[in-house]
Amino acid sequence: MNLREAKKEAELVIPMISNWELVAAETAAVVAALVGFPQKQIDEIRLSVVEACINAFEHSASDDNKVYVKYIVSEQMDRLCILITDHGKGFRPETLRTPNIEDSIRCGRKRGWGIELIRNFMDEVNIKSCGHGTTIMMTKSKVGKEGTDA
Amino acid sequence: MIDTLNVTVERADEYAVISLEGYLNQNSGEKLAQVCHQLIDEGIRHLAFDFEKVAMVNSIGIAILIEIIERLREFNGKIHFYKPRDVIARTFRIMGLTQFSTIFPDRESAIEAFK
Image (cartoon, rainbow over all chains, first blue to last red; front, side):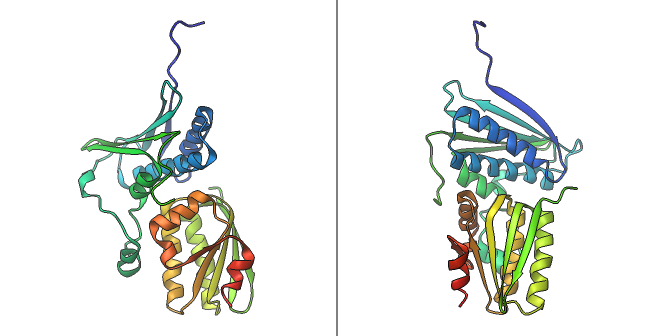
């Protein structure tokens, strides 16, 4: 038996190809199930990972065309942190604006909902971005908010 | 490329029931939009979407649903959804789709509300 228990972490690299976001999302679902999250929260985590990955696919313009996903389970097995990283051009997170359906219907601007959904479904969301990449760090606890729109 | 969404259409006089199975994303959403626009061109004014077997959606796929809502609004048509997973129903609410469409618990109530 090891004196020090291995860290409960996993890493995955996916290509920026449509539907491969499901590989990252299903891996997140498996890890969340191992941690003991209820199905409702697993569904929220899965959808959040999909949104973070397709954001990277659509907007990063990275040269390596890869998304790097890291899953970190807390020692107490009560929290899952997922980092989604691209090596793209980055953006200024403070310029993100909250979309609304009225704009979508009136102005034809139907995109831009990904981060808003992630913020609703995860407990904490932090975005770090610079000229050579973006990382979205999202965390969910087993005993956390169930979403603001429940 | 795998086909991520199966689409099945049942037609009545003024409405159609569209059953979906799989993942609603950009590619499958565009395919679904083609089916819906064809139905609207043929005179269908109300659409009921069976979401029971939709395992996953993304915001781009849902944005395409908004385009279908826009088109039906030109004809005072209605869009009803029934049996979506909880996370999908909440996604609809967050994105505001429920301002222009209604979620029902089952097929019968979704169709009855067209009458």
